[in-house]
Image (cartoon, rainbow, N blue to C red):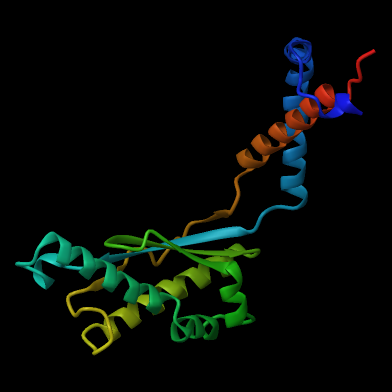
Length: 205
């Protein structure tokens, strides 16, 4: 069994390179298998919406140093993230949509990217594209409303911060993983398995 664990020799590598017909057919077979998996067990849909967050830095800190402004942005960003994931916001999202619980929303269904000054991208993953769009719409609306309500409060965001919805209609919704990814992964997996078989299970005579 030592041949099984020994590193591939130059002959093994040459044999791999010569089997170009096998690799060509293997790419097609692997891609077709990936497509088959995609259509039999499709990934859930993902809806997205954007909220424009403006810290109005020039008004909030007109004469401060860059370092102080950096800490200001970091502190206020954390406050806004806490609002987005707060029990109040998640609970209101669950209340505005039937047959959904806060536990489901917190179990990977919601995600948030690029928090900072500029566009905050909210995502919802769901098997139903319409429900995904409804959930992400509710989430962004409740978030923007709570930001406006809590700005200026003792523990809330700075009063100069503004959160504006940029999408309320025609919410984009698409499969969370594209067909191209399935095709690529299928081809790579088939080639990897084929290489493993050729290198390690072709016992020399």
